[in-house]
Image (cartoon, rainbow, N blue to C red; front, side):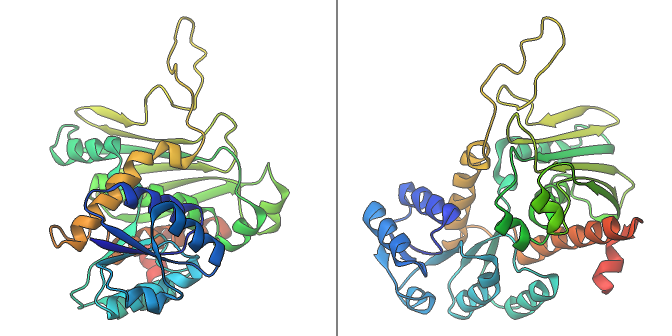
Length: 334
């Protein structure tokens, strides 16, 4: 299988390394506006260099991975689909929901699969949680708690262009809540604050947020996010039902320190980076994409899926701004 990669920044280079090690991938074709990035990938992985996205799509690739800047996502997704090339694109589909809806319209009805990158769907713990919920092991659910805490904020330039913490960070929680529970979010109420980096406040964003989501069956989901967690990169989920309770991320590399006397848990070195926490999930995700390319499975995370998580982020952004509950239906109506 011959796979193209558009964009060779941090995540694009990481994907190139992963794809290079997959047995089903014979060769890579890479393209990046920065010639040095493309050259480095070519030297490291024996990849062919294309001088433009159009050239890459015409180079006989079986599938393409889009890891370019967010602004480029819509055009690259549509170009790949129009060329008949299955495409994997890192989230988000687009910078705005309006653009995302236009992408959905452009690819709808075409027999070319699109997979959006929400890696938690491929993490072993989240997969096990979904299976337990779907098998009825927990009984009827009543509470879900989902957490994403970054060890430190990204650079100021990234924050300014991110669209806000709900769209950039919390959206992973929103997606995996939908995926694990199989339910939709009907209403949100969000709060946020700034007690850390000044540049986050100056960008009009919050560095720490909380959101209460009401799911369509009445289950309550509580989402907690922060750009400041000095102990490490903390991603967890608790799922509580009337028959049992389970947790994802409750393991020895959990970035949390117990002060209970005589307790040695967690005993490992804390996760300090998302690529550390989800290294195996990223590999499984790209393996799944090669199966999509081969026609062996449908897309495990469609454009529609990604937009549903995006609408929840929009509702939370509006709720924080206006200090009130917001329904997802309200933001979809515009």
